[in-house]
Length: 114
Length: 113
Picture 1 (spheres, rainbow over the protein chains, first blue to last red):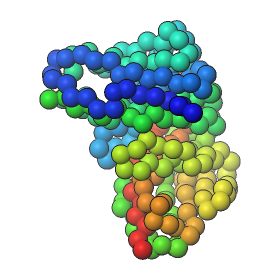
Picture 2 (picture 1 turned 135 degrees about the vertical axis):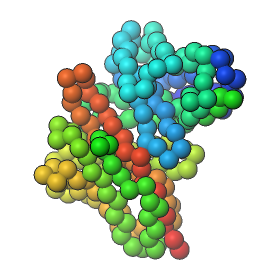
Picture 3 (picture 1 turned 90 degrees about the horizontal axis):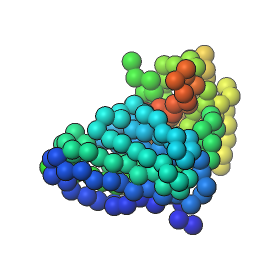
Picture 4 (picture 1 turned 90 degrees about the vertical axis):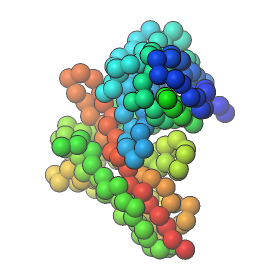
């Protein structure tokens, strides 16, 4: 049971570089999310998607972009990396976006921008 | 004011004791509340959620909700060293701009032998 799979697990970027964090889920969930977690902080929502072709901004979308061409995949694109984007990124999915929906998280991608 | 507030801890309890983790929220429109456990270097995993006033029990865990006081708590009975982790409280809010799940910063729990 793969669940939510994120790649890469670790990455070091130089300032100004770009990269894509991959996220795939095999649970046929409609809802997918990208969060970032800074040390000692809670999870901040970057972008989310309620289905293929539909995405929307969360609390901290600046510097990021997403796409959702299939139900399974929800990649996060970082353009022009900055030190402020050093963080741990979690992709999550849920079967519904309602008030009782459990989030299933990937293992996280630790990104350092130098 | 933060939407979901938690004491960062660490909260230290002896093995076998009851650990009490607290969370307050500011938006009275919050519909439901989640407790996630996060081990160091790992991803969060759901322990339980609650949306009605009162208590909800699941094994050694009890979630308590008091909407009048805007207060949520998680009790862990017979605490074990394996319970040592950070516990994240999250509130689900229906807003005009869409649904939102807001996380607190988490409380670190240490269960000592």
